[in-house]
Amino acid sequence: EDLAATGPVQRLMLFTGVPVQLVTGYAETRELLAHPDVVRSPMDGPHRDSVMDDLIARTEQHMLSANPPDHTRLRKLVTAAFTRRRIEALEPRIREIAAGLLDEMTAADGPVDLVNAYSYPLPITVICELIGIPAVRRDDFRRWSSVFVNAAVHTPEEYIEATTSMLAFVHELILQKQQAPTGDLLSGLIAVRDGGDRLSEDELTSMVFLLLAAGHETTVSLITNGVHALLRHPDQLELLKSEPERLPAAVEELLRYDGPLQAAIPYVARAPIDIAGRRIEAGEVIVFALLPANRDVRKVERADELDITRADSGHLAFGHGIHHCLGAPLARLEGRIALGMLFERFPRLRLAVPEQDPPRHPSLLMNAIRELPVLL
Ligand code: HEM
Image (cartoon, rainbow, N blue to C red; front, side, top):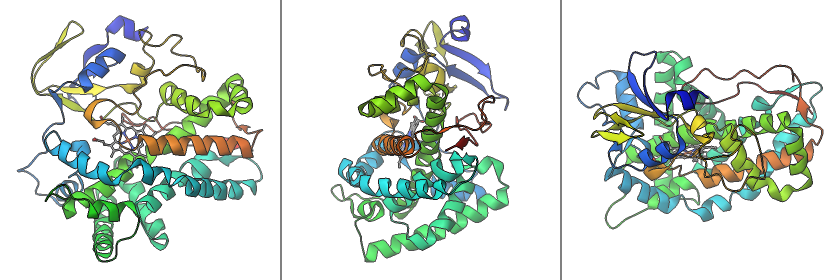
């Protein structure tokens, strides 16, 4: 109703005082995300004088903040190492990690917080193994990454400490893998060549940071929001249990229905763009609200209903255009394994506090349930 009243593209003022063009329509999101004049705003150069700005600069030489031709170059180099084969080969290990976490949960007497016990540790362990972080350093890595990813809730000092420690650690790791490559992704990224071109050390480091920032909390929310939505729709859950071959389609529907991201990282218009009877001016910030776009009634019938039997809805949870999620095959694999194994192990799983909606992180970007107490 709100959408119909205000239109799929609207200009509004953020609480920070910055005017933005908010895009909530499905067709408009697809059109604009594929538009050559919708770009990342160029990185600020000259006023990087504080320690914080310097750290940010050293960890942001990655494709998510780049425009063509830099983006094209980085994405090509990274894609050469981030192969489907490398992702598919992870399946048995993801199952093993999930099984270990489920075993630990079995010991619980009373409600268990699914986020803490299952959704959070699974993807971070997978990313560490994928990158090639030695097991003894994983706790450090997990602590740093949590500060790094949730920068807003930490003090600048905590952020600087975590980022500096992680930079030093990743630098050492790169040196080690340069000397003695193994089969992991970081060794693969170091080895990639495109003619005479390869990733610089800052680009390699930034890629490790990006893998964490883009791939951890998003996958946590795919699992948590997905389990929550299914527990709220017992008919859908029963259908899934009786016909487990529906799992891939169910994961897609869960991504559409209550996806991990409220919005993509902001873009900016490089030239005036006319869309949906409105004009976006050059220089204006564009925010793509992925959740309402995925429930646009002009695209999806009964858009507010969870229906795991839907044919491909073409959802936008992984974005669209040149920045379309590189990790989507990994996220899908983890989502399928995590949900499938959880309901198989605990067929009577239910919400511990069904009368309340679980708290979500206050964020303009993430759509993350903070805590989900369940009874096994
Ligand atoms: C980009 C969503 C998991 C790596 C993106 C974008 C979205 C997204 C919406 C585009 C952002 C934009 O246009 O501003 C998700 C969701 C995930 C997920 C919903 C989980 C369900 C992962 C995982 C990885 C990953 C597991 C890797 C381990 C990336 C990378 C990019 C990206 C590298 C940047 C691509 C580029 O700029 O060309 N993701 N992501 N993501 N994602 Fe994911």
